[in-house]
Length: 178
Image 1 (tube, rainbow, N blue to C red):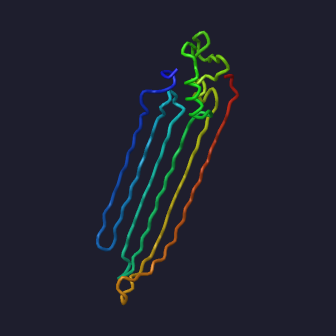
Image 2: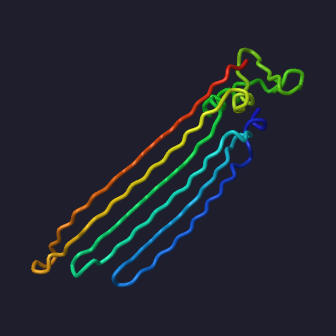
Image 3: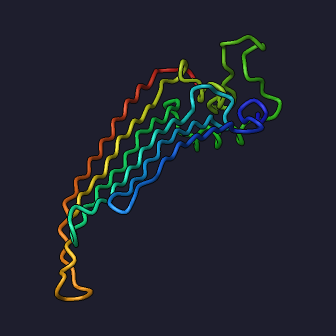
């Protein structure tokens, strides 16, 4: 059952592009990233995608007055079948080694032996339904800092920030014979 449920590897790719620079009046940094990970299950229904962005700008507006702008954003999507990974692994270990995956070896008629769900069927979203979780997260801040010229080492800083977080989950459970 292990070889029918679990892959030898879970492929993953990650890409980033960064840019930075500036001069004595302004400095900037920006980064874009992408990550994809496939599942360790032998199912195309489990995967993860993430995009991220980070940007920082620091500027000397006038003598002793500095402005900073910072932004961080992440969008990710997790796809899976409607059955939890832990249940699939649990029932994979509980199967008898002599039990076939399919009745009489014919797909898509999944075997259900001794009242145990079939883990190969459980990881197939076409059979059991899907679970898709999408998240969006943005953090921003803007600050002004005034270095008081007549008191060495003393400054006043004002900062405003805004955070946005959205999670959208779609779950569809199909009725299936297990």
